[in-house]
Length: 604
Image (cartoon, rainbow, N blue to C red):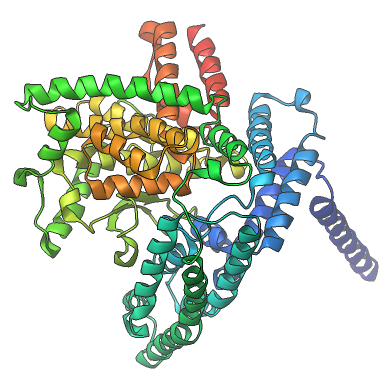
């Protein structure tokens, strides 16, 4: 018996030693198996980003939740560390033998290779951005994250919420360090950014701590945690109030002070061409956002052609409804003021908007069986964009569900100006953000089995946004936009994306002024000046991103027509959409390769 025990102990020790050796090899060296390498790269990235870990929500199902008490480090030191890690990961990837892999393994290799190479190519531009801006700056994104993403299901979640509030000061100091570094490199935000974020931050801290959304949202969600007694509940609420007063508000005060001193500087509202190496930076942003080799000039000219085509289609529809006078933009602007297409400007009207969006989503979801073999398991909800940030937020956006299924996808609608929500534009927006657009594609990707985790989450913008814009067109094709006004809403949305090709390249490549871009978009789209100004200012802080939508849509439609032409009666929407959706997001060149393989296999 003693011998057996000694033998078992020796075996256990050997297993532990082997495990330690393997763990050391995985952590510090290139893993033997590329599948382990893929997960290593993914995990290393995630461990540096606890906020992303919370958003993805897949570790909690394994009982791991320590990251929910931390905030993501945004210091320049970590930026440098991350850049070095990307270069090292690319070097390790290239040490594997791609030739010996099967088709699926090669696709994973090629996807990661493309992503890492693009990141390395942008290494020199890692500070060419504006971390505090009116669209997605830390000053609005962090409170939104706390109110909508941070879990709050039990007392531990609540304690973690308070711990995260205690770290706001450290996080904002890291942001300030990065801003000072950018300033030393002559990378300063446009003047409108400074003005708008100052107004937003001053409004955020003007409320008493108990009236701040960090407190009110916490209090509301805490009310749903039934296991807490009143004494515990009050203790937690006092903890949140204390952190807002003693940590959060002082952090904002330091950021406000920095931006107040920026106001005395000579700031302009130019495109990124005005930054050091700005032209090279924009060229990289064009490539990385479109995943093509198209030049800014080529995209500008393509945009003009698309604008002319869509304008013609809109003119025909408008004339058919009796709107014959004036430019297309002028007629669409007039259509947007008709009371029959608007909601009451009150709480009841806003509730009705959300209910109508949900009804639109439910209706199309019941009509998709003939077009999709794969469907997302996660549901999608419609919610209002948090009030404190809606003045500078876009018209809508989507937040993906957690990977453990605990949080559904959410389509956020901007209800700040209720007269900017036109009934004839709602269907297209819902199809884009939810079903069969972003929610459909992103949820399906996260639910895929048998793929490396990175392929479930990498966001190749042209693919992701191209799919959502393609979804708008698909909705028309399956009969969801038969009403001519709804179809005008679709065409206006497509016109918006075509105009983006012109104005984004106009601002950053052709050196258009902010005002020139605003006037062009007003003329062509008929959108309100408020909406257009917000859009143009978005492009100024997110160079190249707006190009992805139309470039991606054009490519997906091109590939679908190629498949239809080659396969004829054998073409099947469900099988085609499987190819597009069941590989996760892909660079457009790799997506084309997959469609060509599908055509070849179906044709035999």
